[in-house]
Structure formats: structure tokens, C-alpha cells
Length: 222
Ligand code: DX5
Ligand code: ZN
Image (tube, rainbow, N blue to C red; front, side, top):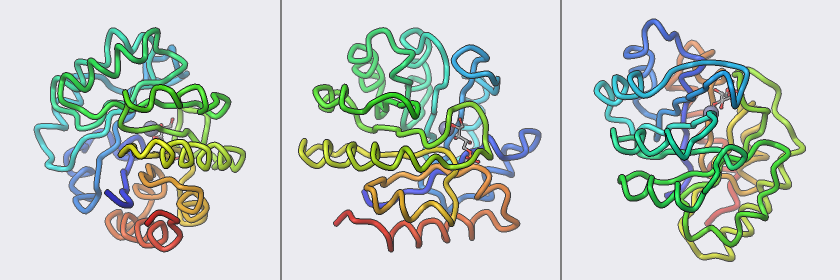
């Protein structure tokens, strides 16, 4: 699939979501952060708003569920038409069953890892998933500083995926900007979430292109 850029609407104007998503028509995915005040200390939006977004854009929707009990709530996001549904490893009771259910509903299944969660525990489950999300900040808020301490985990994830021979995307999320995107691409990430770096720019589409160009140039993937 190559390098993909996924602007996060967490940094968009929530009162004007349709036009805000229209600003990033050149993106590969639109990243939607669902937060529940429990898994993370913030609250954003849920299924009705995701459905509204799906009805107004052709860009595939990438749902990042930062919620407790994803076993109960995640499949519905796939059912309504999200392209990717990512749940957190720390919150899922039965990740294999959940990933299978998300796939059964027609979406790609992603597993998210907070900065302190090791990736190795998922090596045996790679056949069950389509994306690993390596968080590069503590989840919950946009505009945080990128955590360099997560770079070795991106490399480990890439090594695991390469060994498996499977088509599994490695997404990173948090603090991605023109200053940090290259080291993540060099470490093996291929899907780049960026909130403030895109929506904080006067020209959001140009910011997407800048990130894409830098990531493609630094990428070690063939
Ligand atoms: C944070 C969210 C991110 C957030 C990233 O928990 O998962 O998607 O929007 O924002 P930036 O790119 O500003 O760090
Ligand atoms: Zn996110």
C-alpha cells in the first residue's frame, strides 16, 4: 500500500466537520478518535457522529477507539462502514474474537498499543489483524510532544511484520509533524496520523503533502 497519511479530526473545528474533512480530500484516511472518559481522560464522539462523517466523505474512515470494553462497542463501527477499526490491546478482553468480528463486518482490524505496552505479545496473533497502531504519545489529547522512546517499538513491529510476510500496516499516532515524521518512516511506520500538524496549518492539504513527501523519502520500505 505504501505510505499513507491520516489526518486526525481531533484538531479540527468540531462545529464544521464537513468542511474540515473537505480540507483534507487528498488524505488516504480520515482518522476519527473515539474517547469515552474512561479509557482516556477525554470525551469526543461516538457512533452517530461517525455515521454522519461516513455520509459526507469518500475518504476511508479510520476509527481509533480509545474506549473501555471495545469487545462490546467496536464491531458496530465496522458495521456502519468504517474502513479500519482499531481497539486498544489494554482494553480488549478477547482480542482475537474481537478482531475476527471486526473483519467479519468488513473492516480492517487494528490493535493499538499505549507507549508502555510491548508489541512482542502480538507476534503470535498477527494473522488475526490488519494494522498495529504504535502510540507515540499517551492517548487522550492532541498537540502532545512526540515520544522518541517509542521508536524502538516501531522497529520491532516492522521486524515482526516483515518476518510474518503479512500485509499489516504499522500506524503511528501522536506528535507526528514535519520534525518527527522522518524518524518514524525510517523505523518502519507506513501509516501516519497527524492532528495538529495538519489542522493547525493554514493549508491542510499542503501539510498532508509535505508529510507524505518526507515520509516517502525517509521510508526504508521497498
Ligand atoms: C490522541 C489521538 C491522536 C491525536 C493526535 O490520543 O489518538 O489521534 O489527534 O494529535 P497530534 O497529531 O496533534 O499529536
Ligand atoms: Zn488517534
